[in-house]
Image (cartoon, rainbow, N blue to C red):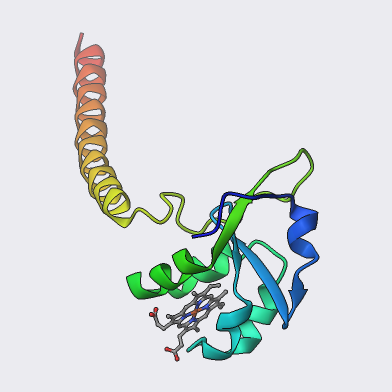
Length: 136
Ligand code: HEM
């Protein structure tokens, strides 16, 4: 792995050619030049995101762990955010750590059930309370 080098967005944007291609994924900078010809999804999509934040494009496809390992090997540094930079495009806010993401969606499913139960109880409470009010 290369040493941690800091890139700004405009540094990355200078590497948008097929022969010199960098992308940002989850705030890390990858030099994907050597991989363009090997990409199973074709070179076109990589050239489209060259010099840009490819986080959303990469995550939308649901790349395998193998794809993430390839990425690891292409790491050249990290993105140094500056005021006014475009926001990171993140389809999956939990990021690359899928175990965390799975746990998170499971727990949000559970809290949804509690929320529905709780709303039901409140609704029943209001119904009975109003019923008593009207009788008295
Ligand atoms: C930049 C780093 C990227 C790497 C290292 C990478 C790597 C890979 C690998 C290894 C596969 C084979 C399937 C898998 O293992 O998931 C794959 C498939 C694919 N990739 Fe990427 N990819 C990258 C970026 C992108 C981007 C930005 C797009 C944009 C849309 C993209 C679109 C696709 C598509 C559509 C496939 C499926 C191809 C097929 O099954 O016919 N990839 N990629």
